[in-house]
Length: 307
Image (tube, rainbow, N blue to C red; front, side):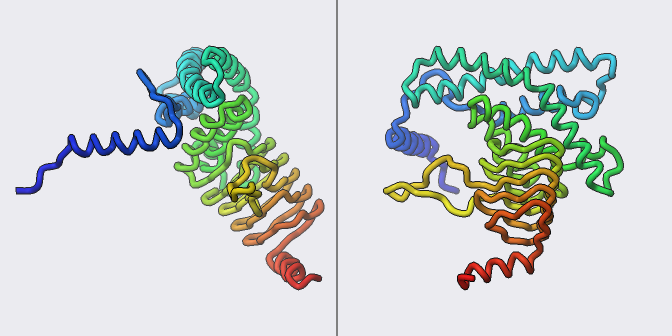
C-alpha cells in the first residue's frame, strides 16, 4: 500500500510557515476577510470594462445596437461597484501601513472610482487613436475591426490605458494587477506608470518592455522585443535599491523603434527619429536621427576608448 498523505501535519506546518512570514513582515492578524485585492476579481472587472468601452466588438456576441446603451449602463454599474470593493481593499492596506484610520480610506475609495468612471470616455478616445495608428501603420491590417479583435498590441494598450488611470488615482497595486493580465496574455510588459501619448502602435509585440517612468509622445511605433529600460539603479547606504526616480527613456513624437532595440536610462529620443533593429542605445539622440547597429557600435567603441 502507498503511504497515506498526512494532511493534518501538512496544514499545521503550512500554518507555522505563514505565521513566521507574518511575524517577520509585521503583518496584523486579519479576521473575517482578505487583506489584498484579487487578481481574479480584477480580470472579471477588466473584461466588463472592455465590453463597455467597445460594446459591439468586445461585448456579448448577441448584443444588438439598439440595446447598446442599456448594456453599457448595466455593465458599468456592476463593474464599478466591483472595482470599489477592490479599491477599498488596497486603500485600507495602504492606511494600515501608514497607520491612518480606515474610514479615510473608504471615503477615498469612492472618489477614486468616481474619477475612474468619469475618465472612461477619454480612455475610449485614446484607444480609438491607437486602433487607427495600428490600422494605418500595418499594411497587413485589413480593417480597424481586425486590429481591435486580433492585435496583441491593442489588447495590451486597452489594459494599459485602464491601468495608467488607476495608477494616477493612487491605487498602484490594482494598476499593476491589470497590467500583468495583459502581460500574461501577450508577452508585452508595460508598467502602469508609463506615460504614453495617443496614436501608439506596438506591432507584433512579444517581448516589449516599457518601464515605469518612460514617457512616450504622439504617434510612436514599436516593434517586438523593444526595451525601454533603466541603465542603472541607485542604492542606499545598506545597498538596497532606492525606489522611484526618473530612470527610463523619453521618446518624443513620431518615433519608430524597430525589433530588438534596447534603449536604457533617462535619455531622449528626438522627434521623428528612427532606431534600427537590435540597436543598444544609452545616449540621447537629436530629432530626425537615424540610428543603425553600425553607428551605435561605433559610439560604444568611442566611449570605451575615451574618444
